[in-house]
Image 1: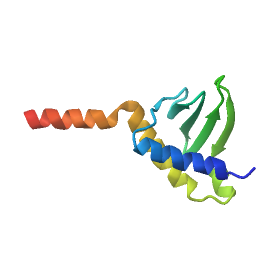
Image 2: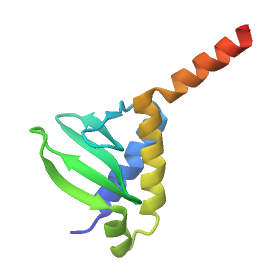
Image 3: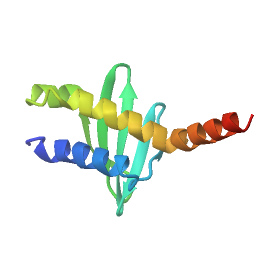
Image 4: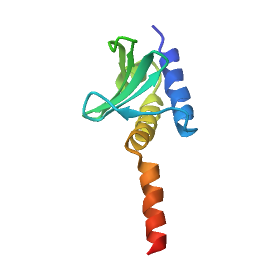
Length: 111
């Protein structure tokens, strides 16, 4: 199967995350973040030095798992950077990094 649709998921999810329209949470695995979309979910996971996009159905089962290496082999060398970028945004979103940073700056300005 062509990975066009999965690459599109990465791109659209990155755009929606950047717009603040997706809510990410810490995932079930170490170094993973998950986002519920309708009754399904997507997850990004970093394992060793590889990124994985996982697609979950409504029952919580992984129905697809694609690594950055799978993308590369199929002609998508840009997928590694796209996954790394989205993983970083998902991590910051899930951990509340932007809000924490603003809180710290506000506190520093009051000192």
